[in-house]
Length: 66
Image 1: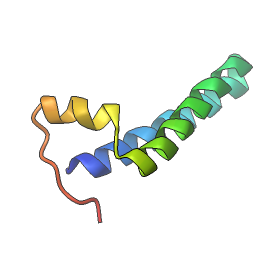
Image 2: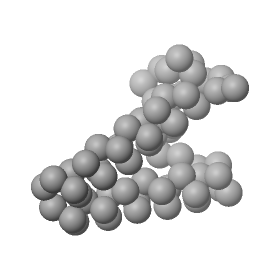
Image 3: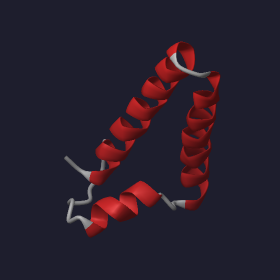
Image 4: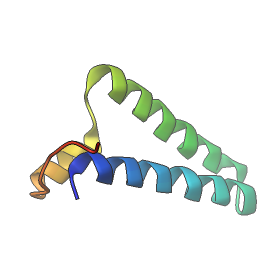
């Protein structure tokens, strides 16, 4: 699976998990949701994605998600 798809799947999973945690554990988890959304937004404009850099160092092949 290319890095792009992994990043999208990871971000979506973190958003859904953080929403569930905010609902059932503590509302402070909404900050995690906001952080992931802000990171996705800045990544769209700058091209900088920390998770993609980590995956590249781990040897995951890059490629287009679409």
